[in-house]
Length: 444
Image (cartoon, rainbow, N blue to C red; front, side, top):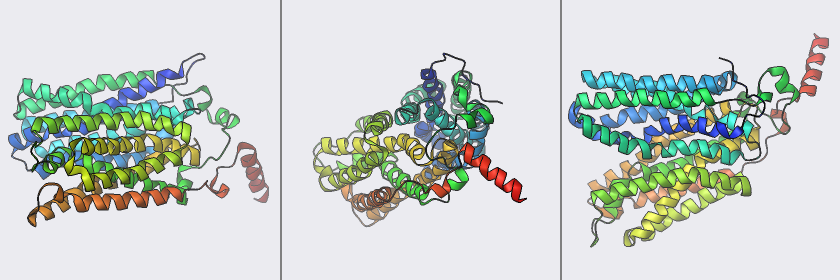
C-alpha cells in the first residue's frame, strides 16, 4: 500500500483529525478497568488475572512500536492505520469469542496480544506524518493526536459501563459489549485510514532526496548508537513511571489518604477523581506540548521532571491534611505525564531530524513498557508491605513517593545531559551521499 499523496491545495489541518480517529479509539485501553469487576465475577478471576489483558496490551504496545517502527516509516501512515484497525478490532472480536465461550485465554490473546499490536502500530502511525506537515509546530501537531490516546477513556469508560448495564455483566453481556466495541472502532478508525495523506515531497525517494530537509538527519539504527537516545529513554521512563504510579491506583489512593479524616472520600468521589486525572492527562498532552514549541523541548522537560518532583514532595508532606492540595498536585503530575508523551516526538525530531523519526519514536516507547510495569509495582508492592506492617492511610504511600521523587531527579539529570547529536551519526546529505557513492565505486 503506497502512501497517499496530498493533491495541490489540500489542507494540512485534515491530518490531525485523521490521527485523532485512531488515537481516540485505541485510547480505550485506559478504560479497561470498567471490565475488570464483571470479568472477575463472570469468570471467577482474581484481580491480578483480570489485569493481565491490559498489562500484556501495554507490553505489546511498546514491543510492536519498537519492531514495527521501520515498517511504518517505509509503508506510510495509511498502511500503519490499516494494520492498527485490523489488529485492534480483531482483538475485541477474539475477546468477544472468549467471553461468550468463557475461555479467558482467548481474551488475553485477543485484547492483550493481538489488540496490543494494534495499540503500538496505531500509536506511532501518524507521528512522522504530522511532524512533516507541521515543521513549524511539531509539538502542537503531535500533541493534538496523542491527546486522543489520553482522552479515549473519557468516551470509552461511560460507554462501556452503559453497555454492560444494558447487556448485562455476565459472560454473554461482556461478549456483546466486546463485539460492539470491535465493530464500532473499526468504522471510526476507517475514517482516519481514508482521510490521511502525506506531503507531496514525501513521496518517492528521488523527490524526497531533492527536497531533503536541512539540519541533522539520523537513521533509526544509528540513533540507537547515540547517548541522546538512551538519555531520552531514561527521561521518558522516569516521567511515565511517576505518572502511572498515581494513575494506576488513583481511586484507592485518595480513599486511603483521607480514610481517617472527618470527611472520608466516597466511592463516587474517588471515581470522579479518576475522571479528573484522565482530563488532566488529556489536557497536558495538547497544552504542554504546544508550550514546548515556544520554550523548547529541554525546558519543558525541566518543568515536567523538576516541578513533578516538587508536586510529589508536597503530597508526601502535606497531602493528607488538604484534599484540594492532594487533588491539585495529582492533576499537575498527570498533566506532566500526558505532556511527556506528546512532547517526546518533537524532542526526537529536534535531535534526530524527520528522516526516520517514527521508527525512532517506536523504539523509544519500550520505555513506556518498562514504566508500565515499574510504576504500579513500586506503589502496590510497597503499599502491601506497609499494610502487612500494620500501617494504614497516607503512610502506605510515603516511601513510594520518595522513590518517585528520586526517579524524577534521575530523569532531570538525564535531560540536562542531552546535547546535539554528533555529526558522525548523521545521514549524508544527497550531494555528499553521491560523492561517497562515487568514491566507493572508483575504489572498487
